[in-house]
Image (tube, rainbow, N blue to C red; front, side, top):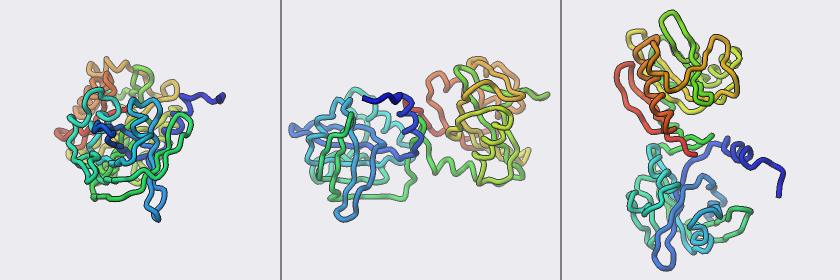
Length: 306
């Protein structure tokens, strides 16, 4: 036993940014099993070894602890639904996700950026998990960007690099700062807007934004990019991030209930649409990253795992 707070420790572990994998196997009676994991690591090149750590809470735990073969599928950008299916779906997961079988009948997830077919090299108990070490017998890979996970949220390096695509005269960087069921906004003569700053160094957007908001008395955890768009009329590039406050609003900010966001007047139509979308998505904690311009664009899933 330990005196450490398990929930706080899990949150601290979650600060480490990882990829997302789906681990699969087949039981002796032919049943296909799979689970989502970010506890994955390469171990050795000679012999070629990797490891994953299935938790004892899994309904299929014993199947993986005892398996002789398994596969690890590294998910690609845009495969959040695949991750969620193998994390929580209670039915036939493989019927929901396109897959093919390797030479030994182990499922490989279609579209994964890397697939490793393995024989079990060693299986060791480790607290409330099992360390499953596999020797890679076959693998595939692609150049597609991968899906990332940190702090309870998915992220994509491919999508978030769009934040750094600075093509206009000025970059406005802001944060949608959540605190309980409210969002911090600042009021201007033209209407409300998220707290924001004008920045020049495109390589320091997140760091400079966090430092600027801290100077205004707002201590926060900055999360994934939420909305990235160009305003051609103002020759301005906008980048807004999700964030969680650790306390009261900073100087010049006020807390507004999320449900009331669509009723306010905002500085621009683009910000009004962004805040209305946030109000809707906050109900389910299923957020998306908007990429486009001030009038039209696409929303890419950034579903928050809990």
